[in-house]
Image: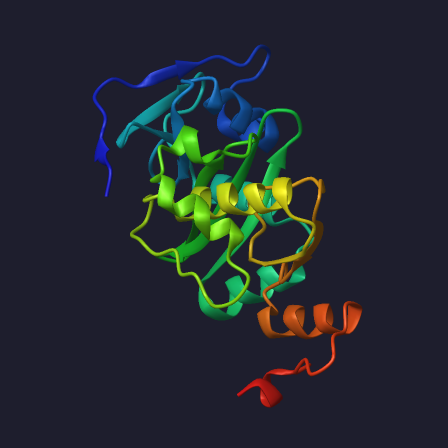
Length: 234
C-alpha cells in the first residue's frame, strides 16, 4: 500500500468552491494537473481527494472543501459508472465493480468502485493514452519472440502495479504491427485502446461475460472444429 505523502497539493477551480459543485470530469482533470507522474486518484469519505505519485499518497486541497462526504463519493461513483447496468448490479450484489472511464484527449482510467462502511470509495488507475513499446518498458529482448508464437498459452503474471497490462499492450501492439491476425481481447474493463493496423480486432467482455465473448467471436469468425461454448470446451 502506498505511503501517505507530506505536503498537500492545492488546486484552484475558477468560479467553483467545494467538491460538491465541481463536475466530476473537471475534478479529475484538475487532479491530473497536480503532477505528470500521477498514477492513481483516490476518493474516500471523510478524507480529501488524493493522488498517488511515485508510490506516495498526497492530499489534494480544493478551495471551500476539506474532506469528501459520502454524498460526494456516491455522486462521483455514479458519474463514473454511468448507465453501465452490469456494473451497477455487480456493485449492488458483490460490493464492488470495475469500469473504464475516459477524459477525451487527456486520459483513460481503470476504475474500481467499492462499498466501504456503507458508503462508496473509488480508486482510479491512470491508463496511458499511448500504447507502450518493448523498449519503453525495458522488457527483455526474448519476450519479443512471444509475438511470433502461433500455438499455446502465454501467461503474464505479477503483483499489483507490476506492469501486466502494459506488457500485454506492448505484445498486442507488436502483433498488430507485424501480423495480419484476428485478435480477440477479453477484458473487463477495457483498458488500452488499439487501432487496427495489420490485424483485425474483436473486443469482448466489456460487461463481464468472458465465456460469452469467446463464444460470440467463434460465431463471427467460424473455423472448422472450433468449440463454440464453454460446455464443449471442457
